[in-house]
Length: 553
Ligand code: ADA
Image 1 (cartoon, rainbow, N blue to C red):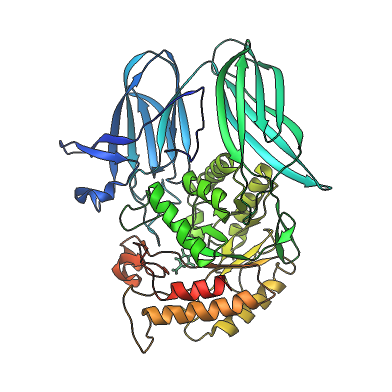
Image 2 (image 1 turned 90 degrees about the horizontal axis):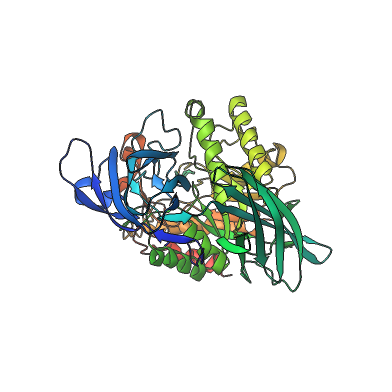
C-alpha cells in the first residue's frame, strides 16, 4: 500500500509488494523475502550487514514506458530492469523512481541490489543511536506511462484578507522523441484550474504555475483535519491519458515572536519524538502498527509528533493528516561531529534528502515544520556554513513552513539565529546528574535568548531518561520506571508552564534498537535506546500516565 487513498484511476499501476527472491553474495541458497520488510526479521539475516539482491518477475500487459517507484530502500539501491541499470539511490528514508522507455509486452525482471553497510560512501547512515536495517523497507510499484505524464502537483494554500487562495505548481513530462501538445486540469475543492495547449518539446519537463481562489473552504487544523483531493488529469487530443491524485488541506504555518501559529492561532506543541521502528517488524511498519502509534499518541493528548531523525513513510504522514497530528519532519542526520560533516558525500547526500523530502511531502497539511541536522556541529564556523546552506535550500523549495534544528551544543551553538524556531535537547537529571531540571532550563533559555533566539519560538525538542520496561524500584533508582516517570513529570511541569516555550517533544515514544557497536553498545542496555515511554512492543511504562496527565490538562 503506497498511500491511504487511490492515487490513479487512469494510470496503469501495480504494487510490487509480496515475496521477492533474495540472495546474498557467495551463497548459493535463495530465499523468499517479504517486501516491504527488513531482512533482519529472517533469523539467518538477523545481524547481516552488507549487500543483497532482490529480484521479481513482472508481467507487462501492453507496450509502453515503465516507471519504477520505491518509497524506501535501506540504505543504498541500484535498480536494474532486465539486467539494464535504471537508477542508483542513497538513503533509506526518501523515495525515488526510475523510468525505462519502450518496454515490450511480456515478462520482465526487476532486480534491486541493496546495501546497508557502513563506509565513507554513506555519510548519513553510520553506526548510531538507532538501527540501519537492510531491505526494501517501504512500498514499491511499477506504473505504465504513455508518452506524457504528470510528475508532480504541488499546492501552497494562502490565506489573505479573510479569503483562501492557493498556488499550484504542476510538473509535466514528455518521454517521447517528438514534440507534444497537452492540456492539464487540476481540480481542488470547488475549482478546476485549466492549463491549455502546453507545448512539450521532445523529452522535455515543464513546470506550470497558477494561482486560484477557493470559496467555502473548510480549514485543516489539528482540531479539524479537513482534507481535499487534488485531482489532476492530463489530456492529449481531448483524450485523458494520465492522472495523479494527491491530498492536501487549507492551513497556514508561521511564527510570530515567541509563538508558533497554525491558521493564525497560537498553538503549543505537545508530542513525542518517534523513530519509525517496532520490536516485531524493525523499521518497516505495516499500517495497523502505524495506526496504533497514532492512537496511543492521541489517547495521551498529543497534538504533535517529531519524526526523529529522518523523513517518514508517507503512509504515516497520511495518518497524521487524517488525525490532526502536527508534524515536525527533518532531514536525515543525527549527532554528526564536524569530521562526519566533512565526509565528501555529506553535503550532496543532505541536499538530496531535503529535495526528496520536500518534493514528495509538500502537500501534507500536517507537516508544519521542516527540520535539519539534529545535534550536528552547530558550534563550528564550518558547521554554520552547512546549516545556513541547508536552511536556504529549504526556503528555496518551500517558504510556507518555518524551519528549525535541535541543538545540544549548549552555550556554544552559533547557529541559533538561522532558523525560524530554535530547538534544544536537554537531558537534565539523566546525563547531567548535577543539574536540576529547573536550573538547567533557566540557564539554557537565558543563553538561547542572548545567542540568536532573542525573539523566536523555543521548542524543548528532547528530554527524558531511560527505564527498562518492567524494572520497578521503590528507591526510584536510575533505569527504573519510577525514575523515568519522575524526570518526565518535572520536565513537563516546568516546560509546559513556562512562557518561554512553544512546545515539548519527549524523548522518546518507544524504545528502539540501536547499532550494537562502540559507545552505543556500552551505554545502551539491551542494545536499545531505552528512553521510550513505551517499550519497543508498545507496552507502556509508568511514565505514560504522567504524560497523559500533563498533555490532557
Ligand atoms: C540525543 C539524540 C537522540 C538520542 C538521545 C539520547 O538527544 O538526538 O537521537 O540519541 O540523545 O537518548 O541520548
